[in-house]
Length: 60
Ligand SMILES: [Zn+2]
Image (cartoon, rainbow, N blue to C red):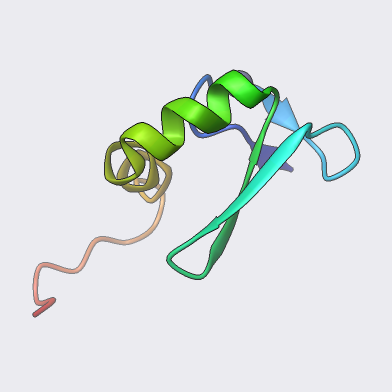
């Protein structure tokens, strides 16, 4: 299952209207608007998408 990082809508590769590769990850979007919002603040959305992963405070 793929999630639109902007609006949180559940998507599949077939239903996603837009996709964007950011920092080596492919992000899928339900609409061009969501993609544009991601492009405006990619770190904000990319970080929230990462929330489910184990956070390591020893980066850098
Ligand atoms: Zn969306």
